Image (cartoon, rainbow, N blue to C red; front, side, top):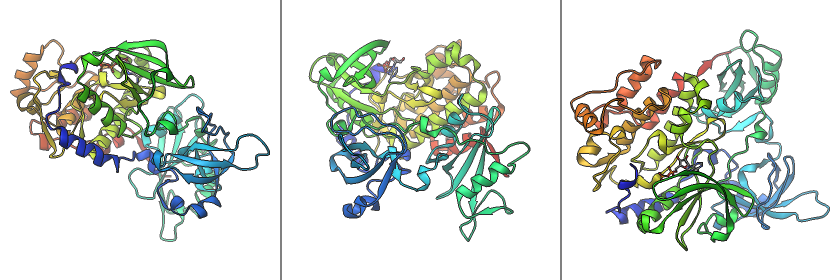
Length: 499
Ligand code: ADP
């Protein structure tokens, strides 16, 4: 259904204005936690040379310009490269007697030596839902823990601990003397001291910190295929090999494959004739400028011949809709389902902050990777909106997901995406049921315009149904923002404790 909507955008100039404006400030949340290359660290490259960095993860070079390394290796950063928007650093490995010792390294794989970031339990900026996914993985047991930067508190931290099948989150407070504490009684001069104390003393009955979560196994994603493709993302076709067909889209097939025989990717083939070239440019440029853990990353395109390729990260479990309907997802409880909803809300909140309107948010357009990590995909319909609302000239619409004002007047906005998110919540809690069961599109449009809303699905808590109804408020302005939805959904689905 997505397809007919991919018409030429009539306000192309403003779209490009916004796209290029956003390029200058489109850092995703996760990047901010890391030793920011644009910050003071690299302002004075002379000074930087004397700072020793340590690798947090292993990394295997994919091109001859990159440097392979192992966790624990030490580096000096020689410069940051303007071409690479600072996400790749040119570094020299220390203590090497022979072999290649300079090359590009991904900046988010290293941290200043002896900084907090090098502690095995320190996760930096990690969202509550990511912490939960990591702590509930099979390698962890009760007491496994990590400390992360708090999402809600500037410069604050949170301690997340596995307790059986759930994850508890504790806010780490800092008093006037900068001491760290979980309560008013026990105060510590460092996070390390706090960790040592709660290894020996209970947080709550029978819950102590045991082993740090194996964060090193959860490498941050590298935003690009390599430092080479950061700006030069139109790539020669010969760099790509296909291994397996994953599915069929409207414009062609989607394959799993490799770039440069080293990096796993998904390759979407698009028959040049099937898509307006400008649409293609809009779709790919929009994606290229978006960087967020819950938004699909675009790696590269090939447009020199038919079919075009759109190369993105590979998401192991395919579309959320198919995943929800799969046997594998049958065992997922409400809590895990809601975690996926929170991820989508976080990704959409980022798009909202970038003034992007998706226009086709639905479970079929969200992809699922390892550990139920969800990423919003298919920006074919996204339009950068200057005035907050984009008036569509299109007539075909995914009716069951689309807000009444978008159907009637073509008024797509972040708030019409919020309406679609309400429908996506329905798809999630029902394990992928088609919304408005038993009704066809025309019936849905007519009934919804008269005030009809889907009833609370079986097994869905009343409070969650209330959130759906807020998303389906007939007045767009009265719907919550995605930012507010994250704030509503997160506490709904987490255990915030005090020690
Ligand atoms: P279209 O939007 O043109 O209909 P899609 O992008 O939805 O095409 O792709 C069709 C199918 O291919 C999806 O349902 C999904 O199963 C699979 N797919 C698409 N992109 C990826 C990806 N990055 N990783 C894994 N599977 C993918």
